[in-house]
Length: 303
Ligand code: GLU
Image 1: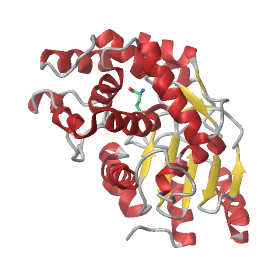
Image 2 (image 1 turned 90 degrees about the vertical axis):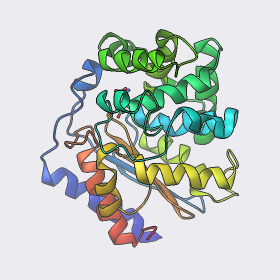
Image 3 (image 1 turned 90 degrees about the horizontal axis):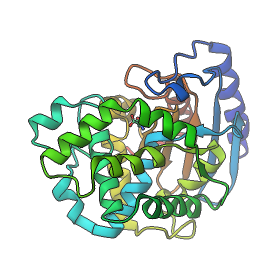
Image 4 (image 1 turned 30 degrees about the horizontal axis):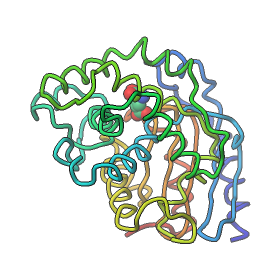
């Protein structure tokens, strides 16, 4: 795949030439401060080769991408029990919608919208101290990435806690429907901290290897679970932009408001892309653009 290197270099140049970086997330002050004129992409292939271009050594806040890891842990801990508390359908609504949660009586549509991710975090927490749950989450991510140099950015976690009124509203709603086992404060403390994990695109692409479903790459979770995680990423990984992402890119992906996207080409590659400017759905603008171009050039699609 010699041409992958030059392809990524061309993509990087094209993204920078186009300008129009867009705006980073503005509701978390620590994220709003990030310079939007940045772009990085890393591809790890099934045979372990690594290709990259752009700002691949810069740490960024992975935010909702951690929901894939917490979901893998929650399913490992409680199996199908989780689905009594969270659905598996696309939401067609913003990531932090409150109205849907009320209409559906406290059972979030899927584990990737905020309400569903809060329930998933609560399942991982399950009566433990938040620090113990966080230790398990960080350890899972580090094993997946094959790097101990992955940490939580405390300033981002604090910023989100201070400004997290919507998430507090969602958590209290969930509690009012008896769909939280721990207190909203404990569950959200854990949620905000795992969302504040920082990675480079190189680390994130490595952390996604287990989702390729290539046994020799990683045995972190079973093949059956890998398929299910990918199915949820495809149908729900980009909030109400999930259909658009499936149409334009054609592979499973999970975005975060920090501007990162982890995309998986089953059996072939794990791709991490980052650019902080967001589109109207709250997903990375140039990240989506770059993945659409890359998938087309490489003929990567699950369809
Ligand atoms: N921590 C973010 C929030 O709860 C995650 C949202 C995202 O990355 O899409 O608002």
